[in-house]
Image (cartoon, rainbow, N blue to C red):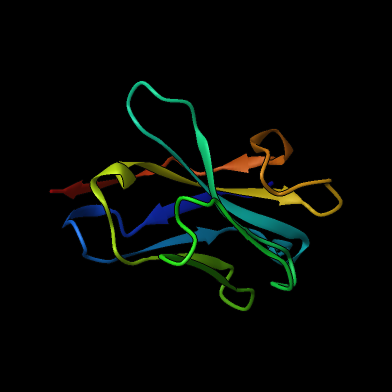
Length: 125
């Protein structure tokens, strides 16, 4: 079992920055690839970014490439999402998720086994 707790969300003006953190419980954190997804009101949950267990492979959605950076610290059981140049369309609840290694893709939410409760990010114009 892995429990995930996100933090770092909040209200920020367009162009600003936020850093989300996701702390994982358990001793097998390094066995999971980690992802960030987001869901805006009335929309489906969408992929944002993902990082492999070793951090060797990183994926980003086109909409955040060049603005967001995902990273992980396996010693601290934590994954981060640094968000710069925020836009109003980035407003959503952000979720972190953990998927056991061996899945074919990190972009599909169906390949994730554990989810956090989400943290709200609101970007004002």
